[in-house]
Length: 410
Image (cartoon, rainbow, N blue to C red):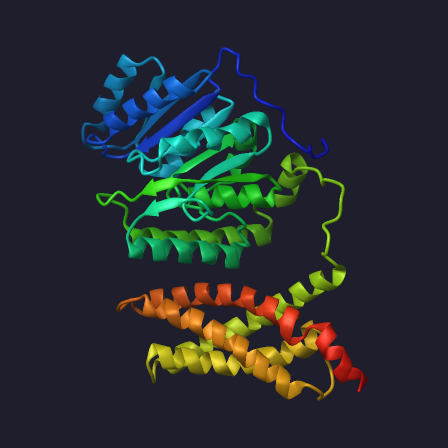
């Protein structure tokens, strides 16, 4: 087995095969398809200094989409059409990417919500070998996004859930603007099961766990108000996908270790400054306490929610679990024993609790008659963010060794 490489080899730009294959998955897009392809082709003709291909992946359209695609392919030699008899964005990308002869594979949504100026920054790090996967991000610093509050809230909550459940380190899983090196795709695609909208997330989680470098490009993105995507049905399918990937990873169905050995980048050979074994142990213990506290909080919230309003139930559940969380973290995570300073620690812990309350209550205030399921999902996401803040404040302020040592020695 080959040892992991520190970087990929650069892509040669002078061969007879296309360097870049941009896939446009479509289903019943007869209105937007032609303008999209013409704009994309004009952009590539003016900017790309290498051979490229535009592949229209028609998945089971019932209107004139296939006819429009075929006409464009006859007009432009760089345009090809691939027809599938079944729907699914993931299925379309899996099929085309698995058979493409290009060195870099990309895709974008037909509505071109993402400004094409981001295409060069998306592809460049893959061509150079610096990165393995590249994604457009609407949530990265520098992105400029125009969309309604409902889509904004759902997107941010979804990505927070990914961070909490699958430990995702990428900021935006669902932006329809991504690219991957073909050599990496050939290794990952056989392990991606989803054929719909969760395909992106599953591929990115797999890439991250295989030790690949994911490059993020902040994009200019304008929401398409005519989009036919059912947000809530898609969100439900994504939650099922999260559960499936979590189970597959734990059971070994996804061979993460083998993929990491095959594709992962070698360590850079220096230790990160300021990261001590003590910090690692604290993070592990804090996470364990946090999981137990979150479960206790959710159970208590759901119980209280049947008897009182969401805001009151949230306050009581947070207060009870905050006191218990502070006490357990004091002893287990940060190793502070004895009765000295208990009162001060609890007071400071309650101040930290106040910040968590503001975050979760603010999230609830943004919702309007959401229903119990969405209400619970939003609270989980807000609590995950509050948990990170809680650890930083507990470690650096409440249980800072320089503050607790005098009390222990007195």
